[in-house]
Image 1: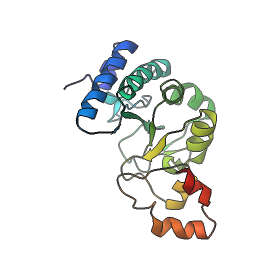
Image 2: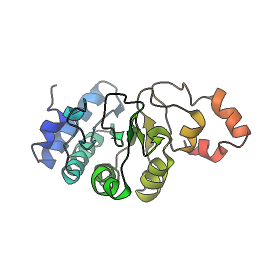
Image 3: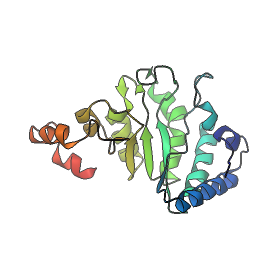
Image 4: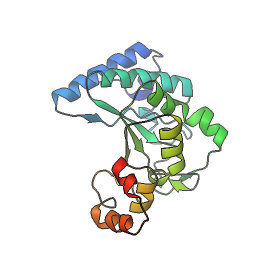
Length: 211
């Protein structure tokens, strides 16, 4: 099945259509034994040269949140978890592991975060994918302020916080920074690295239990 790209879906301004698209993709996923879909991508456009712009929902936070909510609800109605991404400030493909998105608190709250907040609060999304980049000096996979204080404590997110593929850089920092699942393998978050960290008090046992 071929579906409209993200920006094409957002250009419809049709939340019911977004639901139907998510529902159909969810059905296709179930037919193939897929339990998690790695979408939708909902980053706000910052640079017109960003290589992932085609799959995102534009530069308006309300439109982004509304289309994402419909898409997520439709998909998860079929028993397949959506994974909203790339959280957050993913504005570049060039040097995507090293670029740092400097965004002040008001701008984050008014522009960059509302789509993700809607995905959590209104869409009940099952998973969030942390992006490669740093935001305000901290890699997203170890950004405790955004992953834990904002997403879990402020918004009440109960799902899985996963990394983008090879977007984890430090086992202890990721564990303490709110990351639950390193993808595609446990190159950093593994017993070899985390067990000694727990034994030495660098990571609380309760932190591992939460994951």
